[in-house]
Image (cartoon, rainbow, N blue to C red; front, side):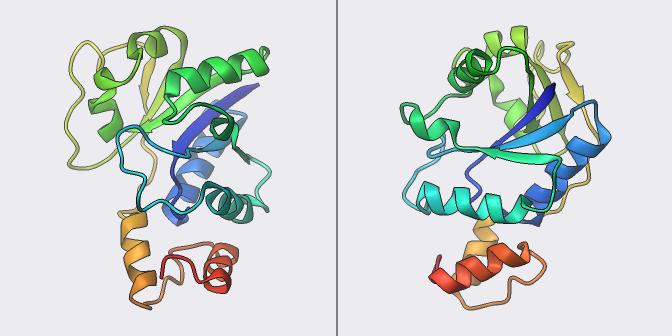
Length: 192
């Protein structure tokens, strides 16, 4: 089974994430896409992060009706901050018959050379890259690596930061969030 891995804080998960994950599952050679909820990104401060179990629950709510998508909390049991190569290694040990494929935006590809053991990632894993207009180009030889595949996935210019700001200011997030996620946020008064 070919499993695409879309890593993220999902703070909160929004329709941009869902459209991207669904597109990758439906329009590439992947059998499924797992959303990997990251407790802490090594490149971002954790101060604005909602508790990891709330973020995990919101992802579950958002994808509940889509059999092509899954979610994993594998990084919750790993040292923090979590590094992609360690997660990939752990997943490969746990699911030896699965072929894991990394999904990332062009902005992350441009900084891949700063990631822990990035050469090993490129040696062992295919990487599907979706467009991020305005992002810097990845340096050579990363950009021309045969494991890198550009996928013309649709992209909405929506950020979790913008959504958190709307929630804090009491503005509508209708159509930005899956309905069950929006209801959960309102019920628990999150991001206020």
